[in-house]
Length: 334
Image (cartoon, rainbow, N blue to C red; front, side, top):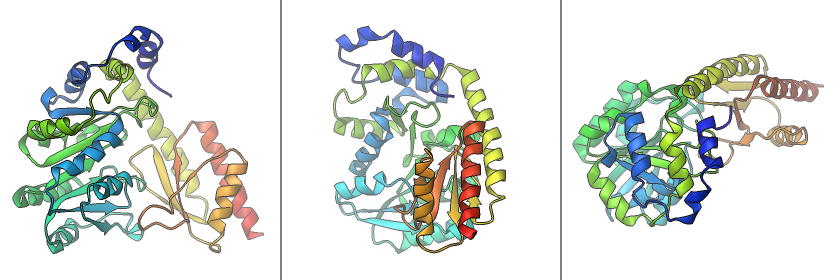
């Protein structure tokens, strides 16, 4: 669908914003987000994309503490903590279990660490696309609360799954719960660079002191002040993605050579099940030559080069991908 019309309209009529510095406190953006999410404005920290906020998070970890990352996941978390010399441990999700995990195993891994400071996970996760079970998340949250650890949940894709799956409302009563989000995915605005963290005011103040002044530009702030008002866009986007994801998932599942993983987001992960080690590379190049760019996931922790992530697009583009995949695997057998 592309960006919402009200966002495009603001961009087309905001030349005057370029003449002045942006609001360093992002007050208008925080007010709009506060109403959209029904959270307090002083619990919102706005950043130049969620990535800026990810690189601020290590400032919350004490010098002698370690962090546990659930992988595969967004690689910037590891880079961010490494940049501050925070020791990083990893808990590997298993593709053969569809990336689901018993919370007890994750808690056991935390308890094995010498001095854990926090846990980071994606919900829904990328590139696997799956949501965590809410009971499991609450179990993790209770453990982190008792042990005085940060539970950092990346909810960049949560709008595709729905707010009922979020722990957002738990932030106010849980000192060490931090939610990271972005407008990049759902609102189709990756070039605008705007993300936000939902966290208690104490941590907001600490990270705000470390944040580069004026990191969020005036255009991004203005767009965010109107972005969440278009309820029709929100509903239409979810309906379209749901419909096309089901179509794409069902059709990809008819291809015997690949295993498709269920997803609660706007993308699907699949694994090439057969062929030699070079088949995944040939598949990537074959699709690229036909004007189709897919994400090879071989550089994600725990995934090999026979894993691919594909976006849910419109019907004609989804059909094109399905047909080209079928042709490739049929030709491979001959």
